[in-house]
Image (cartoon, rainbow, N blue to C red; front, side, top):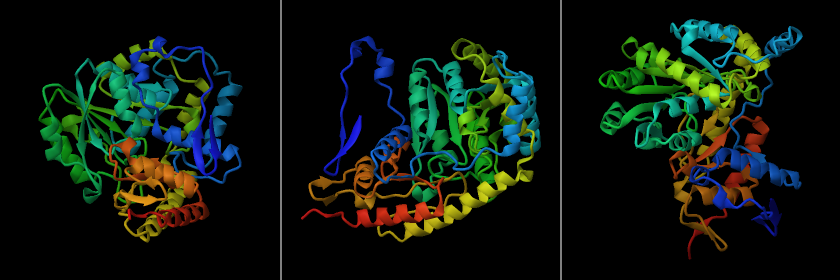
Length: 422
């Protein structure tokens, strides 16, 4: 349990009869998701009456569109409530195939598509089907917090290549080429990116595709979950380059673009061999995702996102919030900010505050800075350490403009308390 005592965040653990020696090294070595951990901490403090502004959660603050809800209600009324096929209902897999053709000009048969309980399970399925001990996956940093833990859980090794704010957090083809070894099984890309909001352009993605094409045994795992939350340019799927389409596994879902986080529907579109392997694995873990959620997702994906007013309104709101947050953070001395082109995150470099102190507290890294800001600004953020860049912190602008303004005012005031050591 977490509580607040005399300005300090304190943890108390109830005794348990379960001996940790009973647990596997696999689970003992697994790191808790930093975003979920910070969200949990902020909710616990809020339950104690403390006014916390939570900028840690990666969840759109918009309701699921009404026409999607009607798809779920219709499924209930027609008793679509039995066990579904493991890879998903045919209606949804066909809807995904139509979406890929309409939005991305990509042809996939329904047999190449596997529906899962969120994009996170779709990713996990790929990792477990792909990796043997010591196999490597190249992961550009900054990266989403769960990538590395899922890869390690599947028995693989993570090979990090770094990109800082100076390069808009995007890696180069040369970095990717240099990282490939005989043990490399896959390259993992995420565009638009969490936590940076960075987006690979057509030319940048084409250059990466050329590297992948030179390595026919390399799989490119493309996490496209933020596809529809884009402020500039167009989304480019690496599968759109014909020379590597059969080397690409697309991961996507409805959580972000349709504000359907709680419906838990993600999917994989991939070469048939990999799709069949993921179906085999999922059949032993969870079987198919919930039928009502699947029918709601089918309703969503059959709609052209360019014609859905709720998506347009959501993206417009995120665009305005991005501009507001970037401007406010640029006004804080010592904070370096890029301008994200997608998603709903800002990932500023705050390393100029490392080594500064307030009272007996000295800030050495982004985790300590986030703890300091939770304590003194009552704003919940996520440290960049969890995303592979300890110089930065992640702010989610999936909240209202007034709360963004108040949160940054609190952050600026709290950072002003930090001074060089005497």
